[in-house]
Length: 323
Image 1 (cartoon, rainbow, N blue to C red):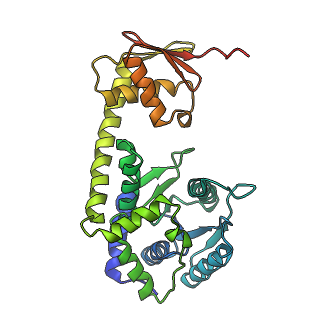
Image 2 (image 1 turned 180 degrees about the vertical axis):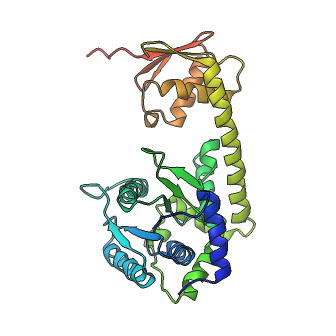
Image 3 (image 1 turned 120 degrees about the vertical axis):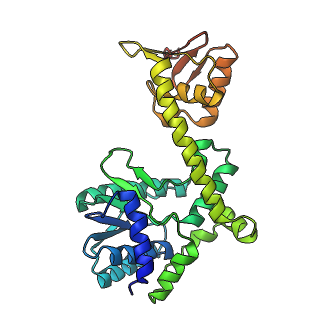
């Protein structure tokens, strides 16, 4: 069942480039699909005795419980401890299912990683996933941060100690399928892969039908955009330090956005708003509308924050609405 030693060696190089050395304990998220099964096989062969696995059963399909048991049997054969996790919701969502399921999945994995003592959690995102993600975000009009795609390393939102790594971002899906087939395993087929209601389905079909759209080159563009995003983030830190001022009582924030490129003005404004409200309350299009309004010399209110124009922009909490 173990993959080809050359593939295992390649996997170790890719993973340890992200974890800065051999992980003492590696968690892997395994759904039962070909991508995550290949990840499980590679990890178990690369780090025997140091791998634990988890499957999140969202309870959204009748087959999901059986798929979790299927993964558990494979893990038992490999000598890998396995846990089945349930999402934290009281009832399954009726809308926006992919996004809510993803959030619930990562929350369940984060809680499990703490109990299991994992240094890292690995997921099986690969080149084709990255290309699909970039196409989807292009269609949505995403900025540089969104177009940077899936990150190879991500910290959990609530902590800096537990980290998600994606060591297969340099691997094609076909390679992962071949690893699973060589092991004599029949991977789970996720019916949502052909769900016409999902953007990812259309992105996948576009890539399959257009040979000139090379997933490797598209994924390379995502990497280049990530480099650009990191440079902009580095610059933003310095602009915030030089041009954003907070009142001692935190009741007022002023920013000097004069003569800055538009993108840095946008980022400076977002940083100022973060002093008053959660980032999720400031969607990108509304932030751009606020920026345009201030540049036009007019005041505006967004997410309970009043913004006033001038040589320096002044942000304060808006007074309560009269009822």
